[in-house]
Length: 115
Length: 115
Image (tube, rainbow over all chains, first blue to last red):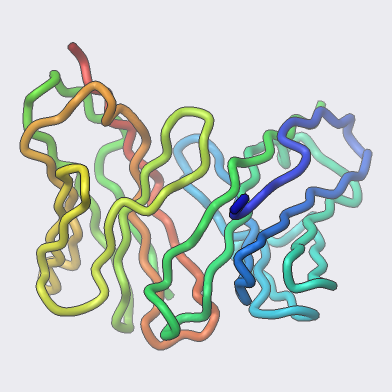
């Protein structure tokens, strides 16, 4: 059981380039999330999805777009990368609140550097 | 809205000594409380959680945390740490009544266990 898988794990971009991070989960979870982790700031929520075909903004959505065309996949896009988007990105998934205990299952992270 | 404050960014401690990692939260609604651990170059893993019932919760590897509603705190403790406990620890909260399952994280505390 792979759990939550993120690709790619590392990427270097130049300012203005675009890219997409893919998150795939095989646990049939409804809810999926994209967080960014920066030193001294913990994890901040970028966007999230409560089901196939739905997305919503989190704390820091500017500069990012997302899509959830299939239940198992949650894509995070950067249309025009900026140095401020240099970060480690984590995807997570879970069952809806109230169904089980609310634990988030995380991928191993994608380290993005924007030059 | 909720917020989480972890009062120490780094906690150095010698092996076999006790440790406490402090977490305070602010919320206008009832919350679930979590501690996650992140080992180097890995994603986050759930360490323990408080959902309801006994305010003292324990993990399988000797950590415990106590929910203090009056102090709005959820401090993490271990009576005797091991080198293998070296990691970053994140406190997090989620809205009990919400339907999004979002977790709000603190800034993280790096536990450095020295031999």
